[in-house]
Length: 341
Image 1 (cartoon, rainbow, N blue to C red):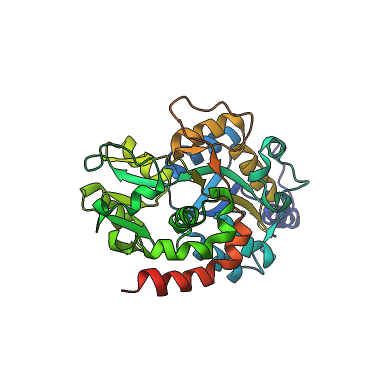
Image 2 (cartoon, rainbow, N blue to C red):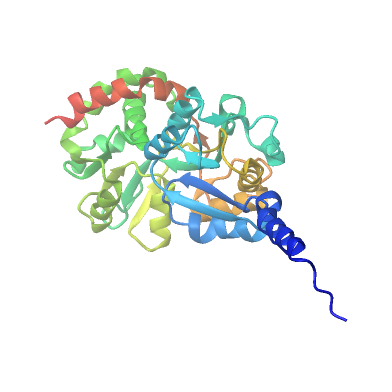
């Protein structure tokens, strides 16, 4: 005998099936990450994390200031879970209440990260330290510069590109000029930077171009139009060297600067537990070794075994809050005294 349920029961069951997904459906296992468009992120690092943890990383590559604007505009309903930005911009995000502290969250590997890579009492963390100093064309410059003072040599007249002060890496030539002017250690020169502008003006005859377009400048550098480039970091210079471009990174005796590659949780962002897993995995010693090889940068987890092929010197870590507080007036002074012709 076949049982035929009453029509009323069928209708109730259908309604229940339609309503159930809204009740029991879990949030999708995915996070939206905003960060820099960098070789190695979407083709090497992110797929490794996705395979290990079984969630999807949706990524939009853009610079830090555009990233910040998106966070501001979506403050009421954040779409991003994690943001990857330079420390000076993360400082602004913290002051505007757009990110939330990592302290006390479920990120076990954070405890093994060196103190300098946990700024503002772990408001965010640095997932690596790219190195910045002097990039040189190996066809034109046979011996690597050993001092920032070499850049002021008259043999480099019209042979140097300098990055605009509107881009974070431009702090390096300003620090170099300050060190040469004051004789102080590079680590102390940020707070003395106003004393370096006179020395930086002396570099002007050697500067062919001040660039706001580093990729275009990199092409000029690799073609041999300029000998020295101040100062793309190791993510560009050593990556391009690995691709057989005729460039290399010099390690001046005064020191090499750690660039700030930060990662933070967006306040109120969706799926924060996956965001914590993502950040924890970035800090995992094995993943840190992969990051070192992929991004030619220093790992920040003290338990990481450094890749043998990555031979970076000790790096100078800067006070990026002081940089952020003084950046606008340095930009104005740079454009008035150095960039103006």
